[in-house]
Amino acid sequence: MTDQKFEVDEEFAFLGRTFAEYRRMFDLSVDSVGGKRVLDCPGGPGSFTAVATEIGASVTAVDPVYGPSADELESLCRRSVDENVAQLREKADLFVWDEYGDPETRGRYQRAAAERFLADYAANPDRYVAAGLPDLPFADDTFDLTLSGNLCFLYDDRLDERFHVDAMRELLRVTAGEVRVFPLASLDRTRSAYVERVVERLRADGYVAQLREVSYEFQPGATEMLVVDA
Image 1 (tube, helix red, strand yellow):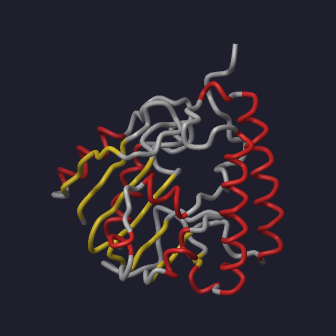
Image 2 (cartoon, rainbow, N blue to C red; image 1 turned 90 degrees about the vertical axis):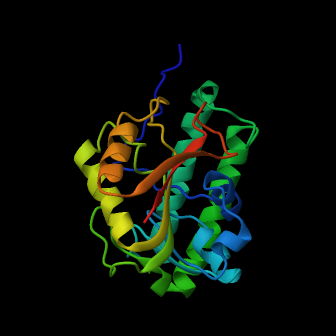
Protein backbone atom coordinates (compact mmCIF):
# COMPACT_ATOMS: atom_id res chain seq x y z
CA MET A 1 0.00 0.00 0.00
CA THR A 2 1.33 3.46 -0.89
CA ASP A 3 2.49 5.60 2.02
CA GLN A 4 -0.25 8.22 2.39
CA LYS A 5 2.16 11.06 3.09
CA PHE A 6 4.45 12.82 0.66
CA GLU A 7 7.83 13.15 2.33
CA VAL A 8 10.11 16.20 2.36
CA ASP A 9 13.45 15.17 3.85
CA GLU A 10 14.92 18.68 3.89
CA GLU A 11 13.53 21.25 6.30
CA PHE A 12 11.48 22.68 3.40
CA ALA A 13 11.39 21.81 -0.29
CA PHE A 14 13.05 24.27 -2.71
CA LEU A 15 10.75 23.88 -5.72
CA GLY A 16 9.32 26.52 -8.02
CA ARG A 17 6.08 27.17 -9.87
CA THR A 18 5.50 28.88 -13.20
CA PHE A 19 3.53 32.09 -13.69
CA ALA A 20 0.71 30.04 -15.26
CA GLU A 21 0.52 27.83 -12.17
CA TYR A 22 0.45 30.89 -9.90
CA ARG A 23 -2.45 32.33 -11.87
CA ARG A 24 -4.54 29.23 -11.10
CA MET A 25 -3.26 28.67 -7.57
CA PHE A 26 -4.01 32.25 -6.51
CA ASP A 27 -6.89 33.08 -8.89
CA LEU A 28 -4.89 35.87 -10.52
CA SER A 29 -5.60 37.89 -13.64
CA VAL A 30 -3.16 40.09 -15.49
CA ASP A 31 -5.07 43.13 -14.22
CA SER A 32 -4.83 41.96 -10.62
CA VAL A 33 -1.02 41.88 -10.90
CA GLY A 34 -0.03 44.55 -13.43
CA GLY A 35 0.97 47.85 -11.88
CA LYS A 36 0.96 46.39 -8.36
CA ARG A 37 3.69 46.11 -5.76
CA VAL A 38 3.74 42.36 -5.17
CA LEU A 39 5.51 40.20 -2.60
CA ASP A 40 6.12 36.51 -3.32
CA CYS A 41 6.97 34.89 0.02
CA PRO A 42 8.45 32.36 -0.09
CA GLY A 43 9.46 32.77 -3.71
CA GLY A 44 11.56 29.64 -4.12
CA PRO A 45 12.94 28.98 -7.62
CA GLY A 46 9.73 30.18 -9.28
CA SER A 47 9.29 32.20 -12.46
CA PHE A 48 6.48 34.42 -11.14
CA THR A 49 8.77 37.36 -10.31
CA ALA A 50 10.41 37.44 -13.73
CA VAL A 51 7.18 37.09 -15.72
CA ALA A 52 5.02 39.40 -13.58
CA THR A 53 7.66 42.11 -13.86
CA GLU A 54 7.35 41.90 -17.63
CA ILE A 55 3.64 42.73 -17.43
CA GLY A 56 4.21 45.79 -15.28
CA ALA A 57 4.26 44.55 -11.71
CA SER A 58 6.96 45.50 -9.22
CA VAL A 59 7.74 42.15 -7.61
CA THR A 60 9.97 41.21 -4.70
CA ALA A 61 10.60 37.54 -3.95
CA VAL A 62 11.74 36.48 -0.50
CA ASP A 63 13.28 33.16 0.50
CA PRO A 64 15.87 32.16 3.14
CA VAL A 65 17.64 30.06 0.49
CA TYR A 66 18.48 33.11 -1.63
CA GLY A 67 22.00 34.52 -1.35
CA PRO A 68 24.28 31.96 -3.04
CA SER A 69 25.22 32.40 -6.69
CA ALA A 70 22.92 31.31 -9.50
CA ASP A 71 25.33 28.49 -10.28
CA GLU A 72 25.11 27.18 -6.72
CA LEU A 73 21.33 27.39 -6.70
CA GLU A 74 21.14 25.67 -10.09
CA SER A 75 22.55 22.46 -8.65
CA LEU A 76 20.09 22.66 -5.74
CA CYS A 77 17.17 23.19 -8.14
CA ARG A 78 18.21 20.25 -10.30
CA ARG A 79 18.57 17.91 -7.33
CA SER A 80 15.27 19.05 -5.78
CA VAL A 81 13.30 18.47 -8.99
CA ASP A 82 14.88 15.06 -9.59
CA GLU A 83 14.06 13.91 -6.05
CA ASN A 84 10.55 15.31 -6.23
CA VAL A 85 9.74 13.63 -9.55
CA ALA A 86 11.15 10.30 -8.34
CA GLN A 87 8.84 10.35 -5.32
CA LEU A 88 5.88 11.47 -7.44
CA ARG A 89 6.36 8.38 -9.60
CA GLU A 90 6.18 6.17 -6.50
CA LYS A 91 3.16 7.97 -5.02
CA ALA A 92 1.32 9.13 -8.12
CA ASP A 93 -1.97 7.82 -6.76
CA LEU A 94 -1.88 10.44 -4.01
CA PHE A 95 -2.42 13.30 -6.45
CA VAL A 96 -4.82 14.65 -9.06
CA TRP A 97 -3.21 14.67 -12.49
CA ASP A 98 -5.70 16.75 -14.48
CA GLU A 99 -3.30 19.69 -14.25
CA TYR A 100 -0.13 17.92 -15.42
CA GLY A 101 -0.94 14.47 -16.77
CA ASP A 102 2.01 12.65 -15.19
CA PRO A 103 5.05 13.17 -12.92
CA GLU A 104 7.42 13.81 -15.85
CA THR A 105 5.29 16.71 -17.07
CA ARG A 106 5.15 18.12 -13.54
CA GLY A 107 8.93 17.93 -13.53
CA ARG A 108 9.09 19.87 -16.80
CA TYR A 109 7.03 22.65 -15.23
CA GLN A 110 9.41 22.75 -12.26
CA ARG A 111 12.49 22.82 -14.48
CA ALA A 112 11.02 25.57 -16.66
CA ALA A 113 10.24 27.65 -13.59
CA ALA A 114 13.74 27.13 -12.19
CA GLU A 115 15.41 28.03 -15.49
CA ARG A 116 13.52 31.32 -15.72
CA PHE A 117 14.17 32.03 -12.04
CA LEU A 118 17.91 31.42 -12.30
CA ALA A 119 18.28 33.74 -15.29
CA ASP A 120 16.37 36.54 -13.55
CA TYR A 121 18.09 35.92 -10.21
CA ALA A 122 21.47 36.40 -11.90
CA ALA A 123 20.40 39.44 -13.94
CA ASN A 124 18.25 41.21 -11.31
CA PRO A 125 19.46 40.24 -7.85
CA ASP A 126 17.72 43.23 -6.25
CA ARG A 127 14.38 41.48 -6.81
CA TYR A 128 15.37 38.53 -4.61
CA VAL A 129 15.76 39.05 -0.86
CA ALA A 130 17.29 36.49 1.48
CA ALA A 131 14.87 36.47 4.41
CA GLY A 132 12.09 34.35 5.82
CA LEU A 133 8.94 34.33 7.88
CA PRO A 134 8.03 35.36 10.46
CA ASP A 135 10.48 38.30 10.22
CA LEU A 136 10.60 40.30 6.99
CA PRO A 137 12.90 43.29 6.32
CA PHE A 138 10.22 45.60 4.94
CA ALA A 139 8.34 48.63 6.22
CA ASP A 140 4.64 48.52 6.96
CA ASP A 141 2.36 48.52 3.88
CA THR A 142 5.21 48.06 1.39
CA PHE A 143 3.17 45.83 -0.93
CA ASP A 144 -0.27 45.94 -2.53
CA LEU A 145 -0.58 42.17 -2.90
CA THR A 146 1.22 39.33 -1.15
CA LEU A 147 1.22 35.73 -2.37
CA SER A 148 2.39 32.95 -0.08
CA GLY A 149 2.48 29.45 -1.50
CA ASN A 150 3.56 26.05 -0.22
CA LEU A 151 4.77 27.00 3.24
CA CYS A 152 2.02 28.01 5.65
CA PHE A 153 -0.42 25.13 6.30
CA LEU A 154 1.69 22.68 4.25
CA TYR A 155 4.16 21.66 6.98
CA ASP A 156 1.96 20.87 9.97
CA ASP A 157 4.60 18.36 11.09
CA ARG A 158 7.23 21.07 11.61
CA LEU A 159 5.52 24.48 11.85
CA ASP A 160 3.29 25.06 14.86
CA GLU A 161 0.29 27.30 15.44
CA ARG A 162 2.43 30.12 16.84
CA PHE A 163 4.49 30.20 13.64
CA HIS A 164 1.37 30.36 11.48
CA VAL A 165 -0.16 33.21 13.46
CA ASP A 166 3.11 35.17 13.55
CA ALA A 167 3.75 34.54 9.85
CA MET A 168 0.30 35.73 8.80
CA ARG A 169 0.52 38.81 10.98
CA GLU A 170 3.89 39.64 9.45
CA LEU A 171 2.60 39.21 5.89
CA LEU A 172 -0.30 41.49 6.75
CA ARG A 173 1.99 44.06 8.34
CA VAL A 174 3.97 44.55 5.13
CA THR A 175 0.87 44.48 2.90
CA ALA A 176 -1.50 47.38 2.28
CA GLY A 177 -3.95 45.36 0.21
CA GLU A 178 -4.51 41.62 0.20
CA VAL A 179 -2.68 38.47 1.30
CA ARG A 180 -3.41 35.19 -0.50
CA VAL A 181 -2.21 31.82 0.82
CA PHE A 182 -2.33 28.45 -0.96
CA PRO A 183 -2.68 25.51 -0.34
CA LEU A 184 -4.52 24.89 2.91
CA ALA A 185 -3.66 21.18 3.03
CA SER A 186 -0.61 19.66 4.72
CA LEU A 187 1.75 17.04 3.31
CA ASP A 188 -0.53 14.24 4.50
CA ARG A 189 -3.21 15.62 2.12
CA THR A 190 -5.61 16.55 4.91
CA ARG A 191 -6.73 20.08 5.65
CA SER A 192 -4.21 21.77 7.92
CA ALA A 193 -5.16 21.68 11.57
CA TYR A 194 -4.26 25.36 11.82
CA VAL A 195 -6.49 26.93 9.16
CA GLU A 196 -9.58 27.55 11.29
CA ARG A 197 -7.54 28.55 14.33
CA VAL A 198 -5.48 31.08 12.36
CA VAL A 199 -8.57 32.50 10.65
CA GLU A 200 -10.20 32.92 14.05
CA ARG A 201 -7.15 34.76 15.41
CA LEU A 202 -6.97 37.05 12.38
CA ARG A 203 -10.65 37.92 12.59
CA ALA A 204 -10.17 38.68 16.28
CA ASP A 205 -7.39 41.07 15.19
CA GLY A 206 -9.94 42.85 13.01
CA TYR A 207 -8.98 41.44 9.61
CA VAL A 208 -11.46 40.23 7.00
CA ALA A 209 -10.45 36.63 6.24
CA GLN A 210 -12.23 34.32 3.83
CA LEU A 211 -11.71 31.04 2.02
CA ARG A 212 -12.01 31.22 -1.76
CA GLU A 213 -12.19 28.45 -4.36
CA VAL A 214 -9.50 28.29 -7.04
CA SER A 215 -9.31 26.31 -10.28
CA TYR A 216 -6.05 24.54 -9.37
CA GLU A 217 -6.05 21.05 -7.82
CA PHE A 218 -3.05 18.81 -7.23
CA GLN A 219 -3.64 17.55 -3.71
CA PRO A 220 -7.12 15.96 -3.79
CA GLY A 221 -9.71 18.42 -2.52
CA ALA A 222 -7.19 21.20 -1.86
CA THR A 223 -8.94 23.81 -3.99
CA GLU A 224 -9.23 26.73 -1.55
CA MET A 225 -6.95 29.63 -0.75
CA LEU A 226 -7.04 31.91 2.26
CA VAL A 227 -7.62 35.56 1.37
CA VAL A 228 -7.09 38.24 4.02
CA ASP A 229 -7.68 41.94 3.52
CA ALA A 230 -4.87 43.87 5.14
